[in-house]
Length: 366
Image (cartoon, rainbow, N blue to C red; front, side, top):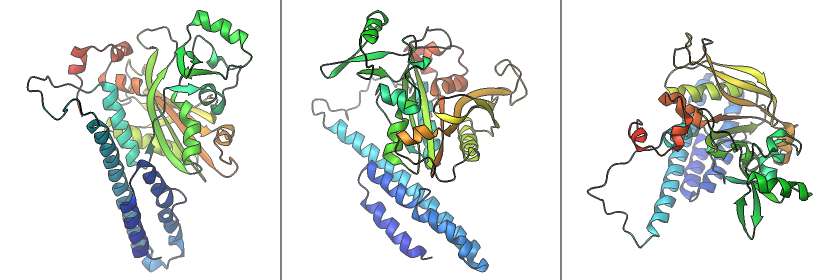
């Protein structure tokens, strides 16, 4: 086991990284389930007992330092790409400060999203992004929602029609006859109803072994009230590899919740049904408002329903080009809108989309 050799190759490969895609390739080669560093950890059992502790500590330090260097480099690359795009605008010098400008504040969803991304990036998750317009296949079929599933109903989904390279939202009155007349609905697009619409892309892009999250905005044709809106934010998470189990799911969700709420959080699973997982669960978190003693928020149960999750359905893995007999994975999805309401003690979700500047002024900034 030559640690100096792999350290030299890691240093060389890190120095050669230029793009975000290069970061994904590096992670796959060294830090993934089948990566070289992980493989070395598996070889510790073959080392004589007197050296095993020393080598184990050295390997763990190597893995931790490599992950930190990779995530730092990935952030630098993204910041450089963003700055390069800004500098292309030669009409306005954005570097000149406005003396009279009022300092703005970040939106609660932005604050929460950045915290969640930072937490999961620290656990080795790739941060993905996806378009808000999805194909019917991506939004439904690829995640095991068949054509007769009620989730495709016009009352729930904003359907769009392709028009000369563009897409236009179909109102209910005009969409119903169109759906009846056309034999195939696959010509239509949708405003994604869940971030699960990006599962198939992540499976094909990073599989068969990876861990990634995809936060973003989603849309449903809801009747607006204090707890429902037509636009809300979610985060989708996946981990795929060999020998992945429900225990892995519980561990990562517990660690993520503890990091977001800055306190130890207990979790529990209740059986539930979601088309894209089998078995499926609702994950409950111990109430952060009363420290699990019982209050009106948790209805004196000490638990708050946090997210849906489960082991990825074999059909979903197959649609992503992954052999479900060899690989397994878990998936989870939770609402960033709901998380923001919990964090800031909000009882009406509509204020998050209202543009109320007085409310935004009072949002604590990280």
